[in-house]
Length: 350
Image 1: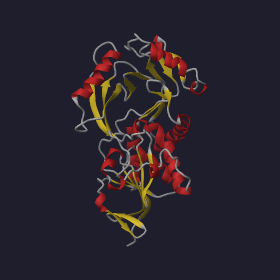
Image 2: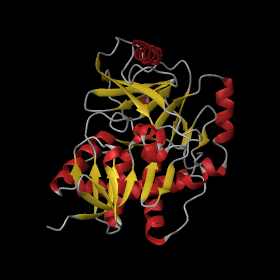
Image 3: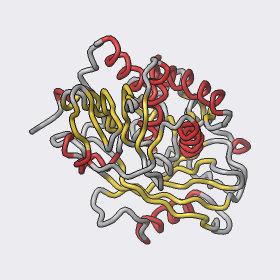
Image 4: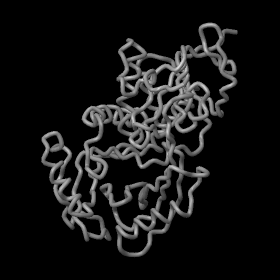
């Protein structure tokens, strides 16, 4: 009996694996996925696409191109999967002191920033209960990707196509079989590792500059309607109906991947400083290990003949992933060189 042969096998169905699978399929490659399911960093992320970030409101790297690709890819996926998960949302951000106000005045005057720099948020635009002791400004063309909805809908589609194996990956079971890679009888011409933080245990990815961190978040009962993303120390983000996502508390040193009292208290303390009124009831606590990279750039390319990595999207995965999935697939199809900033050939240290 002839064994089924796949052009690509993807390890991991987080955001990176899901989006890459879609681009590979569109390019005509038969592609399967291995993923055991369960909670992932992608699934609990707020999914914010933020044009201007950090204390100095710097325009995110490549954001014009990233946004254009995201606005092409995600709505198409919504139509194909008959699921809504991509929303345009302004980002209301606090200016906590005079230094921040001066920095914003400077950045918002730059020509390259004008499409994203809104004015001061009026009180009637603010959500009920938001303390207005400091001014808030509006960042335009922000978006939110409900990643968990995308992953669930895409997983259902993969199951319908018999293109997903719901098991934990075992690196020792991957063997070279002539011109193919053989994983427990499944033959693939090429394998792409998209496992997120689990990549740190991948023997084929030793030497890559991962610098994992832990993020914690929570979902609370919504005290008011929230149509924008609001930031002051933490983000408050629209979630399911009647719910907000709050986060994140980030840790570089941690003992486990579960929520902690310290992390959850840090988020709740920031929330109470932002909003007046009764404390919002907590519905769920989240924590996950994030595949952060030291220079905050994704990791793409071949690590051994026929073995590739597509990882390291980090906290900006919702904006980075479609653009770099298209770039990576173009590289695989035509040999177009990868951008030097993301090519693993120049970033592995063995």
